[in-house]
Length: 347
Image (cartoon, rainbow, N blue to C red):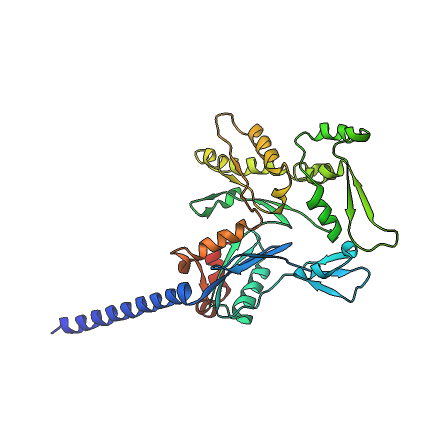
């Protein structure tokens, strides 16, 4: 007689467990199959956006205003409509997207301010009603980060962050992208840039498009072509007391346990727009090689498209079997608030 109530209680507990398990399975199914996933690499310069089953679109993540027509505002790829880009300047907002009934994977910087993280949660869950959210780390236009990963986990003790404060017009940015390159011998190239005539191989003239009263505007460049990117390798040249990128990579890896270091030196991956400078990958490799013990192998990989590389990574995450365990659902957020995001995303 005494065992009957116990069996009843046990059966009740077992039924409850089955209901909870079914609920979790139903919830996981809703996250992974019923809802499409939007992947947004929310860069400060370009936004890379697209559903995980589609191709990525790259658009300027900003608004433009013209110095000659300040009342007119252009957004994203409306820049293609502008006849005279010489007077444009950027307005870089914290962009938001308006997509309902989807999951979202969105990037944000390492060490993001708590207030910004909370605002992002509110925007994604409360204003736009996303069903599930995964916030992941990325770096780019405003920052450079050196971040070691091992078995999909970042090693916090070795993360290095470098700040870039950008104040560029559209034209200056185009000059940087079109004609700048990374020198493999800075002082040697500086000597060459002082020569006259055809011996001055860095010298180049760039014609700026647009309507001008005096015809075309020509910009003549010599050592500026490689002196600007040189700041990434020697920021102290302009009074910024930080390490250059190769030195920061080595310093980051040396903060890891010694037995892990050889594996990281031969698995260095470059991402972001700066890595597209001609000569960037070679310069990083040569300087890291010089700073690394000779018995370690060094490999520096430049992906086929470093600009969309982070987006492609987000797409792969959305297809991962463990995706539903990575996200915070709207139900989780409504029940636990910001704390569940802070715990799960560990930014």
